[in-house]
Length: 449
Image 1 (cartoon, one colour):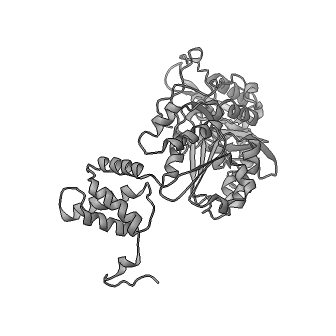
Image 2 (tube, rainbow, N blue to C red; image 1 turned 90 degrees about the horizontal axis):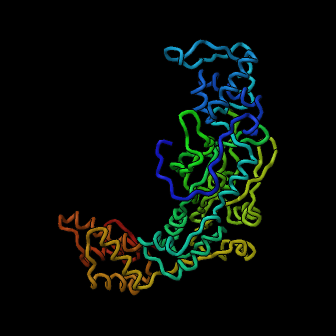
Image 3 (cartoon, rainbow, N blue to C red; image 1 turned 180 degrees about the vertical axis):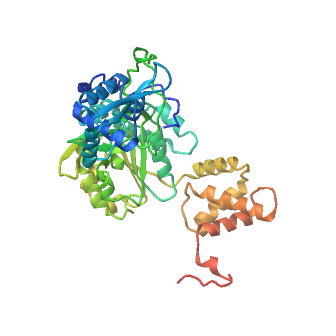
């Protein structure tokens, strides 16, 4: 959490208030006594400040828990840390406390930020729902300003984003489906709060993932400004941008289940739970190890009812609101991936078509400008003619960058200033699409059969 960016202006829902009593946490004193005993046993924690930092609980609540442990003779005070009368008391487990720690570790070895309750997490997901954020025309235009996208496409994309329902983006490879999906995911600006973990039926499920969740400075709230001795914000929740989770061909059904650590005996939330209140992108849909039908069967209930069901190792099941924008991206024909019944459950279907000649020119000129090149008209006309007439290939958004990268490499090899040359472009096109003629006269090669 060292990389904390400036928060967006808005925030989804109120700042969660810090619990000031054990009852306000939704847990009981026995839970925290066991949790603190594990902290001493596993992490060698010994004073209130260390516990407050590790568990994200307010100092007063930490002191109450340590006092309870002292009363029960599970810990004893071993003096104070620091110098002088202001030093903090240091605590050590007694023999009974060590046994309590071992008993707690036998249940699970999780120690860290205190969990929120399932009810708190469910309520927070609903409070900061993705459909509560409006994405207007201006924001769409700003987000897509650096790429060439037909206005007819963004006109249909805008309502799809605002609906918060699933989107299927399909079309030929290389026309920006993944880029569009990623830009959609990055367009949201409000702050949400993600719990470090939550508790269900005694089981701990970790949610916050620094690899996926991007912490931000919390939005200022004058009524909840921290003072020297008190901060009203519940530190068990991390203020973050709406998460973006991208998965591709590696996605399996098992990755959508709770991941149980058999040694430490706690859970890691699956990736789509970590994406709650954000965007979940399934790239290259249809090319996963598991069949499209199996994946879609897993998603039927969440997509329709907006509720997902998960099961603990013990067999206990629970539900979470399924609040996220799910984007399927594929270069396969939708009719080959799913039957009409499944297609109906994905309300928005957007096709990325072959760019027009005008859009293709704009893409080519934009990439050339970024590379310090000017695009001559004769070179552009040559590329279009070769692609369509010689190679019999449609125009695609990825082609200009491929060609320009090859031209720059050829100029570097020749030791000349970067510039378009028709022979360099011809070689780039030959590398772009392999045909039988590419093999004729080449040493050690045979034309493909």
